[in-house]
Length: 301
Image 1 (cartoon, rainbow, N blue to C red):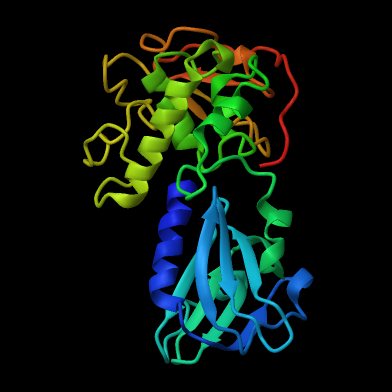
Image 2 (image 1 turned 120 degrees about the vertical axis):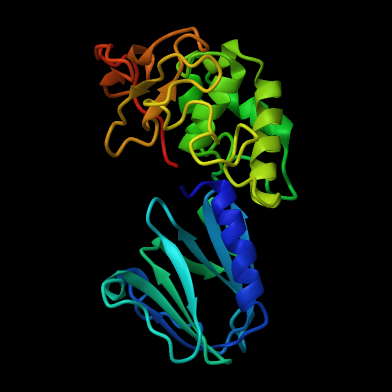
C-alpha cells in the first residue's frame, strides 16, 4: 500500500533511473497540464514529503527550475520502459504523463493524482501544509508531538492519519502503532505518550524504507501472514494473544476513517463508536454493532 515509505522508495528508484537524463518530449494527459511542456529540461532528482512525490527539473533558458508534484493515492504508479517496449493495452487509457528521454527510454505516470507543475521555489504551495516527515532531513519530532497534541481528544488512529500533524503514516502504520502502544485505536491521542509514539513511528518508517527485506514489516518477521500484528489478521487472530481481531469498516471517501483492525484483548479502551465519523464495525469472531458517530471529520490529507 502506498505510504510514506512506499513513495520514498519510489523516489530512490526514479533517481537511479532518471537523474541526469534530458527530456526530449513530454505529454501531460490531464486537463490542468495539457499545454505544459518540460522537454529540454534535465531531471535533477526526486524528493518526497509524506506521500507526495516531487520530481525536479533543471532550468531552461529564462525559465526557472520546475517541480512536478504527484500523489499515488491507492492506485498510482510510475513505469520506465526500455527503447521499443510498450505498456499493455489495458493500461494505456490510465496514463497521465509521458516523458521521452534522451537515451530512448520512456517514462509513464499511470493513474497519478493531484498533478501540478510549479517553479521549484514554490513547492511549499503544494506541500507546505504537511507536518514533519521522518524520512526527510528536516525531520522535527518535537513539532510532530506539538501538532498531534493540538487536539488531544482526537482518536489516536485519526490523529496518526492526519498528514498535517505527521506526514507519511498511512493506514497500516496507524493500526500497527495503536497495537504497539497497547491501546484502542480510538483512545484520545492526548492520553498516550505522544513523544514515545512519535519516536516509534519514525523508527519504524525509516526501517521499512531503508532496510532490505523490512518493507512494511512491523513484527520483525517478513513471512507473509506473520508480518503484521493485527492488520489484515481478522481470520488468523492477534499475533500476540491469538484472540480475535476486530475490524471497523472504512467510511468511503473519508480519510479520517479508514478500515481499522485491533485486538480488544491487547488494546483496551473506547470502541469505534468514538471515531470521527461514519459507522459500521464487525468482529473477526462475529460480534459488534455500529453506533452513531460523535464528531466531524478532519481536514485535507
